Amino acid sequence: MTLSVFNKWVFSKDEYDFHYPLFTTMVQMWLQFAISVLLVYVFIPRLKPTKYPSLKEYATWFAPCGIATGMDIGLSNKSLQLVTLSFYTMVKSGSPVFVLLFAFIFKLEQPRVKLVLVIGIICFGVVLMVLNETQFNLVGYIQVQVATVLSGFRWSLTQILLSKVTLGSKNPIVTNLYLSPIMAFTMMVVCFAIEDVPSILESKWFDGILSTLKIISLIFAGGIVA
Image 1 (cartoon, rainbow, N blue to C red):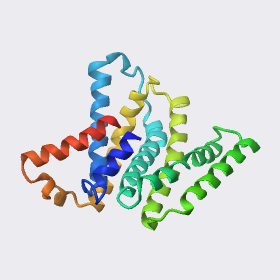
Image 2: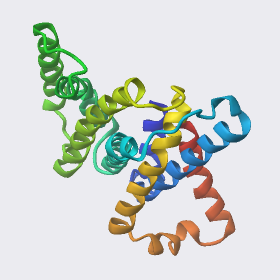
Image 3: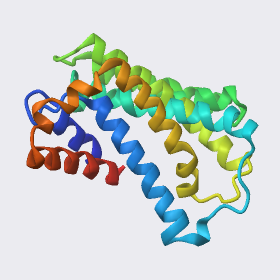
Image 4: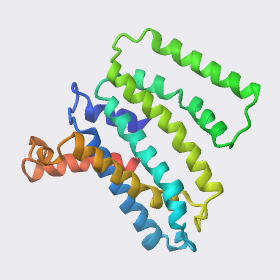
């Protein structure tokens, strides 16, 4: 919740107006990778994996999960430029629906009448919440809705990673160590394609040492919370 409010303040045109959410997400994910490496290999060496996943496992499970996670977070942040925080929160609250749907697809859960009813109630509740949104933005809605679908997909894959794939350690920091470089690289590709990184580095936000330190500090603050 803190991160959502912070990101909305950073990206909103009416607030700080740093309108490069994909660039921000990319930097934060590389930061997460760096922090994970430091924790596992320097500060808490007992977390160091005793066995690493095979190339096939990494390509089959980690890569799709990392790509989905990166796109989920990237689209979520980008949507905050266009929709209100309350609308964003309401749409994202439907993520349990997609968590369950993908759990059915991957056979992590058995379809039951009770679960189907739960999905139906959540869908109905989300529709009621967004029905009277006065500041509806179609592009922003599509972005956050796709992010919500990807959220369900990546949580199901994460469940498979933690239960079926040989990680050498079940610690979530180790899981993040494997996933964060894929997430970061995914966002780097998308960021360079959409936001024109060279122009960002030439913008007013990086015009001088003080302004550069200020924006980097803000980006890092969000990354550390994440």
